Image 1 (cartoon, rainbow, N blue to C red):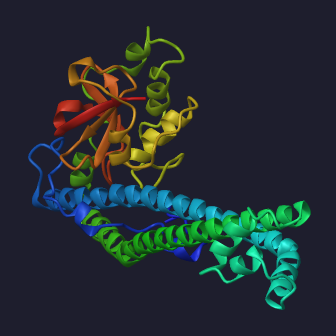
Image 2 (image 1 turned 180 degrees about the vertical axis):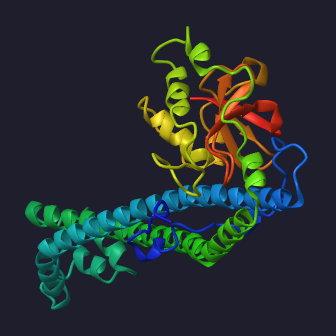
Length: 347
């Protein structure tokens, strides 16, 4: 499908597949907007419901993958920065190393037998450096170089530890992203199989059944012109106005318009027309914005349905929503109470 784009990176090869099959395996619910459906319509509705769950879970997985890839990029950038700091610290050590080497060699060769020699046989190089920097026998210039060497050594040790930590974080982030991508890739065929089942079931319907499925794009007594009168320009009602212009467009899995939509794709498109960017999945849309009680709904609010938040529409006034419901049904206005209410959000 044209709307299911491919990622170019290897770690994100499965960007357009489903993260978790389980997210779409809950009990399917027949579309309550269809009264007295035939067995063929019931089967189509069941298959369509499952494919919608899979599609929205796919979008949610894509959001998760994008987030993991962002964490990976950040971790890799931190690791690169830590490596640069380590290189700088080692370069500083190299700058002062000759002076320290000459001082050490002179004392071990008997150039001096004094407190400095005693220091030179200290238990560890670090102990040696700690004590050398305080010895009065050192000239000011030599002491300064030893102190700078010690500071560079400390910086190098800290940078090396930071580099190890950031490398581990980058490796973990890459593994997480690859795991999600692999899950997506493995389940892409499942979604395609579901789509094939839906389209096959739809093709088996009679003309009368297809007409029953599609229904009317507006419920009885709903006049969009009247609903839009008096709404505040520039408010989220403008998103509703945009969504209503798409009534009659087809349902298309993974699509965000302008020729077709899935449920969350219609919300993304409508809000984009007023300069607001919504998350791509119904679950993510259900988690964003501000919660709204059912009795406080305003035109343009998002209304989420089903226990897994796998369907979303936009409140269209007078107890209705505008939504892209399922394959074979155009974008339409339908009663809000025809679907199991999950929650509502205002953006």
